[in-house]
Every structure is written in C-alpha cells, then in structure tokens.
Image (tube, rainbow, N blue to C red; front, side, top):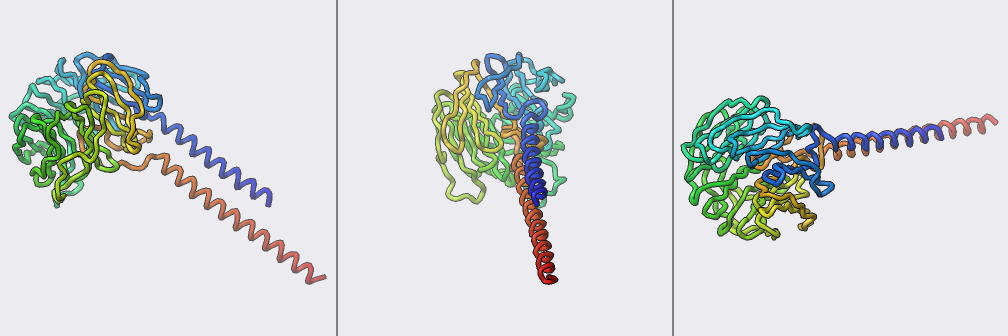
Length: 400
C-alpha cells in the first residue's frame, strides 16, 4: 500500500513539473514578441518595451519616420511603414534584421493584416490606392483603387447572412470624404459618404466598425448594411483606436482632452445609441495611439510627449510611465500572457475572433483532470487491496 501511495505522489509531482516546464517554454515563443510592446516613432526609431519589467529593453534603429507597426501571429516578424522613405519593411524580431522591403508611392503610413496573416495591406494619404503585399517576399500582389487619399485601413470577415467560410474577407478603406469596401479578391462592394471626413478605423470581432473623423467625431457603422448606426463621440481629436477582445470595448485616444474614451460595443439594434463614453481614462499628455493586450488585462497609451503609459484595465489604474522619447505614432503588443503556437492575429486595425484561452490554462486543466483520475484510481486500488485483506482474514478466522 505504501508503494502505491508513493507512486501516486511521484506521478502527481511529475505532471506538475511538466506543467511548469511547458509553461516556461511558452514564455519564450519565436522572436521574443510575447510580453513585448513595440513603439514606432520614438527617439530610437522603434523602442521595445518588456511588459513584465516595465521598461525599454531594446530598440530597432529605423529611418523613414516609422509610423504603423504590426506583428505576425507568432511574433517572429514585425511589419513597419516608413512613409518618408516610401516603403514598408518586414523585420525579423529575433535578429532585428530587415527581411524584405516593398517600395510604394504616396508615403505609406497605414498597415492592416489579413485575418489569416498571409497578406499585408498598405496605403497612405499621398496616394489614392491601397496595395496587397506578400509579407514573406514583399511582392505587390494587388492594387485597390479608391480615387481618394487613404486615411485608414481595416480588414473584416463577411457578415452577410449567406456567408460561408469560403466567402472572401473585406478590406475597408477610409478616404477624404467616403468609406470604400472591397472583397480582398478585388471585387468592389460599395462606397458610402461619411460626414466630417473619415479617418481612423477599427473593426473588433462582431458586426460594427468604428470610424473617427477629421471633424472630431466617432461614428459606428454596420458591417452588413454599411450604414451609419450613430455618432458616439463629438468634440475631440481622435487618434488610432484599439479594442478589448474580451469585452468588445473600444478605446479611443482623445488628443485634444488628454484622455482615453472607452466605448461599449454597439450594433444596429442598439437603442438608445450612447453619445458619451462609458468611462474616461485621464492621461498626462496627448495620446496618439493605444494598444490593449489580447487578454484584456493591460493597456498602453503612446503620448505625444514621448511617454508610454501602462494601464491596468480591470483595475482601472496606471501601472507605470515609460519614457521612450520622440513622437510615438503607434504601439502594438505581442501576446500577453504569452501563448506558444497561437494563431490569433495581433493588430490594431483588422477584425479578429475572440482569442483562445492561454495555453497555460489548458495545461492547468489537463493536469488537474489527470491528478483527479490518478487519485481516484489509487483510492480504488487501495479499497480493493483492503477488501482482499479483509476477505482473507475473515476466511482464516472461519477455518479456525
């Protein structure tokens, strides 16, 4: 019986060690992107913040006034727009070396990544087209003509009632006066005017796009009908948005009032339409961009004064202020907590489905189940052993 108990404890300890070991390996996924935030436009070009250490731990010296930065799903590649050089660069995050460059007209500053991460879209206000780029080779694969300078890009899945998994995704492009929607295969779906001049666009997983305007408003647009649901905010100067993939809340930098406006998700059937933020996060400077980690726990606001503010989203508090210098245009985070092998798209502008639970949670559940099964099995063996001994003892007494 003692031997069986020892086996039980040894097996339990082995499984727990396996869980810890796998968890530790998950924290070092390819490229080191998990637990890191990349800030474009800093004094160093691109500054790299270690989320756990709450400080800058590296940088990528890059000319061309880098604006938008996106990450590949595994964090191994960084996509950077360099508008003053007229190009988009693909950089290996581990070596910090440029893999390839796509030269484009029109000072490209905007980027969006397809939902399967196989196509990179780029555009800028100096040209009337958006281009599809192969992120592995930087070859231009398609051109989308809008007839207007481009102010924003986003990718969304089709929300048509008859949509199937094979239905093409959509590319949403904001221009000087209107919003144009293409299927990613190049088919034009339509164009709609947006009062005030559309600018930044964010499409969380769901049925609604959120668009800022140069006139100082934020409007919600139904993805299926492509009609304005309503105006959510007015009277601000709004920057590049991001969203909480867990709650669906949209975080809007208000450069004019030095704050983040948090919007609850709305749909075509939402009544009444909220015209004020659900809550306001005051900041010490003018926010140009915001990033929310994939688990909805942390937020990062890049300020025009060269600071990055780290936020505890559930706790609604400031965690740290990190000096990066320069004028940080854009910020993006890798997976946090890190999850090895994730296929979730990590970006500001494109739509994505709700993220899977971190791998550590799955491993923890598996370990608990195995420990319970092993405990039950051990108890069963001990009970059978006790019964056999009792039966043998009873038979012996009976013979005597």
